[in-house]
Image 1 (cartoon, rainbow, N blue to C red):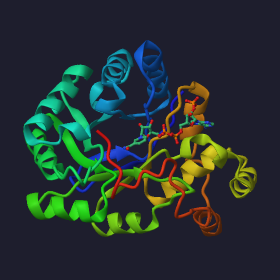
Image 2 (image 1 turned 45 degrees about the vertical axis):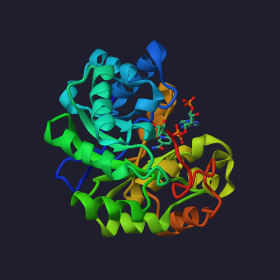
Image 3 (image 1 turned 90 degrees about the vertical axis):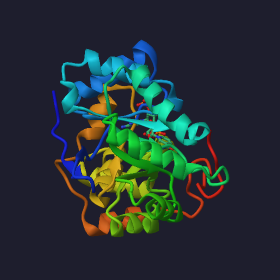
Image 4 (image 1 turned 30 degrees about the vertical axis):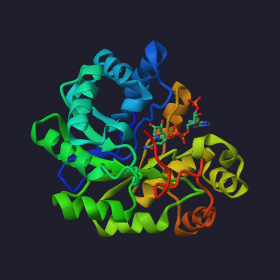
Amino acid sequence: MSTLIPEVTLNDGTSLPSIGLGTYKLKGNTGANSIISAIHQGYRLIDSAYNYENEGTVGEAVRRSSVPRQHLRITSKLPGRYHTYEKAVTTIQESLYRSNLDYYDLYLIHWPNPRQDQYVEAWQALIDAKKWGLIRSIGVCNFLPEHIERLEKETSVKPSINQIELHPYFNQAEQRKWHEAHQIITESWSPLARANDVLHNETLKNIANRHHKTVSQVILRWHFQLGAISIPKSASPERQLENISIFDFSLDDSEMNQITTLSRPDGRINNQDPATYEEF
Ligand SMILES: NC(=O)c1ccc[n+]([C@@H]2O[C@H](COP(=O)([O-])OP(=O)(O)OC[C@H]3O[C@@H](n4cnc5c(N)ncnc54)[C@H](OP(=O)(O)O)[C@@H]3O)[C@@H](O)[C@H]2O)c1
């Protein structure tokens, strides 16, 4: 069984599927089996990170799946403790070694860590690793416009992607508008807000009932119509399939607006504001 997923074109001319698999906490043989199940159901974009300690699991799933490597898009991310140029280069090489892959399709800086103030050095390492063929596309996560402006000013290279916290309770309207004006694709992390109380929201339940869909499907369809790539994590084959079965219905303007009104200034899951929060 496989579902066809539309693609999004990046500012570097490459493309990515508009929905992928999050892999936080998918580890070891069990994790690899979950990722293989997702690939067999049609997922082609897999998100991972050095700090998830599962690059090996992802690489193993890629080799054990029946889909050729060139049809998959594999992401990893650089941790905050390795932002100096030399450390960033070594970490990208170590990421490849851990996954046993020849290249990553997408490599992102995981957090800007503005107080540490080394993210421009890290970005230069990503730019060079792309030139050396280790990475196909480069981007960032959790960067505010001021951080991205600095990257562009100091290196003349703009990220293709900014992966940010985005779900109905924190819809990032201004940041998304800024990305759009700068030809940067928004990628949504925790797109289901970790599937906690959001799944019981009455507005979302009403919209879901109208379309004979689940609340998760309505939320993921909303991301798609916003133009954002979402990466819901699920270990369950049933929920993996549910999450990509969103291309046979659409939300009208009124439904999109109703979902927009659910956003709250304090809607972040763990209050991780990139202006102050740092992760290493
Ligand atoms: N760049 C960053 O700083 C950053 C930060 C956080 C996350 N991420 C990435 O974003 C990915 C997704 O975010 P996330 O894992 O935090 O949260 P999420 O994808 O919003 O939610 C995952 C949770 O929802 C459950 N779930 C998935 N589909 C469901 C469905 N259809 N119905 C009911 N429950 C469902 C999953 O349980 P089951 O597995 O049991 O289905 C899991 O507990 C991560 O895995 C990671 O790759 C990046």
